[in-house]
Amino acid sequence: MKQQYIVVGRTAYAGGVLKADFELWDVAKQQQLLGLSITGQGSDLRRVAHQIADQIYQKIIGVRGAFDTRIAYVTMVGLGNNAQYSLVIADSDGYNPQTVVRSHEALLSPGWSPDGRELAYVSFESGNSAIYIQNIATGARRVASARPGINGAPRFSPDGKRLAVSLSYQGNPEIYVIDLATGALTRLTHNLSIDTEPRWTPDGANVLFTSDRSGKPQLYEIPAGGGSPQRVTFQGQYNANASISYDGKKVAMVQGNGNVYRIAVMDRSLGGQETFVSPGNLDDAPSWAPNASMLLYAANEGPRGVLYAVSADGRVRQRLVLSDGDVREPAWGPYRNP
Amino acid sequence: MNATVRVSVVALLCLAAAACAKKQEVKPTPPPENVPTATAPTQGEGVFTPADLQSNACLRTRVVYFDFDKSDIQSQFDNIVACHAKYLRDRPMARMTIEGNTDERGTREYNLGLGERRGNALATALEAAGASASQIKVVSYGEERPVCREHNEGCWHQNRRDNIVYTTE
Image: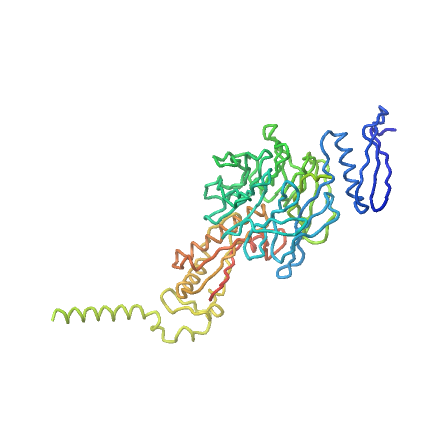
């Protein structure tokens, strides 16, 4: 056998419960690496399979697998007054899509709470942008901000207690942090430029954001309690919409040069070295898997938007099989507890 | 005597002021309501009414276009700014929403900011021409409401725009 590893297993159903036993073997050493039994609802075959894949991935790669995770994205069908937007949640590979919000007006910027129970997003259903937080299981939702002007780009803090947003009610888009328990607002930026797309560093200490204070959009970093922003990106004419890996080392972003917008990954542990992981021309919205092995992004194929999953080094790229219509705004959810 | 003179002077001033103030309304021999179409009243001549929003060629134009990544109002749209500002001056109860839009290039959230900047640029120009800030509301739709969906400059140009929507005529 030329294979390095082999998995054997069997499934059994008893009283609506699925039980899967499997073993992972190192072929050359003739050594068992894993021997586990996973149970789930009879209808949860896919989830159990993903959990097995996560165990195997972790044993071989040494990093927790991200197969048993969910993604969120937005679809649009129809045009003009007949447009129908949906905020959808699906398995990480695009299966089991479930619509959690439907609207005739645009939906954008979904962001997961760290426990995976809530989504923050922007909806234009009132005629202007407003930020909502919605419980996925119950559908209950509340308004996080519906001020005059732009209410955009919500992102939960790593502890889930705060929401970073971009608001323009004081004149132009600035970065604010909303304390979700009290509703208190802390303003982080003070500049006449467009400041938007806040992204928490994994330790919650800093916020990366997009600003055109130097002319074109670039990424900056500011302490989450306020302070002076430092510019982070220096390659490319246009850098925006960052996604930060779980370890804080890799920053994926939209990088525009001329009319070509591609996803670039900057490795901050390697002195800001950058690689492109998508071909363009109008790629947007990179979102890391929780283990940073892959990322999702939105691309255009002719008249419609599609989602791709690409490995962190850009070598393996696959289009997700999703519903018809225009698909955009992917957001990879956190790890799930089995 | 002095008092009488003073009174007549005041009366004369009042008359003159009234004449001046009324000139706009009184002077045009065919009242503006009866002017058929497309004669955009020049500054100081005639007062706009809601009917002009349908009949006046300048007021019927409700779109201003922008260059890529720019938000300045180009001089070719000066007449559009002037006639809509005059309408708002003539009709203090009138209200408009300016909808700022961008093309699809770049990120959605950044484009929300850019659309707002374009809406604000038109609002500022209207206010500089005498409209009241309280008459104007700006909403940005970013790249979410394209009128054209092809991926080329011909299409992008049509999408980089402010739409003027009268919410109270």
